[in-house]
Length: 131
Ligand SMILES: [Zn+2]
Image (cartoon, rainbow, N blue to C red; front, side, top):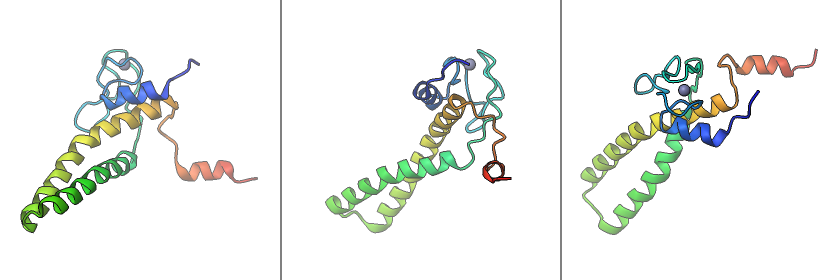
């Protein structure tokens, strides 16, 4: 089995490209992973990122929005209602922009780690339990 670079696969995924060839599209829609790469035929549809991309997106967006909100509030003291609406809108737009990129990076990571997509936490617990 050949080595798979995690950073290359995640970078390709982040750009929503196939982690294997970096040319074909890894996504069929906004967040729907393509069943196979349209360039190299690599199987991609079995990867289930579940809550991972959402968690990472919240982490990233919060670390941008909160300092910006504090900086604006401290420096300019804008009218409260307009400020809240603007920050909520900025949070929503940034979340929608970042989520598909982060999901692509997760798909790249799962591809690089050769995950099959059928891993479940309870199955892993059973394997760990002594007979
Ligand atoms: Zn490909």
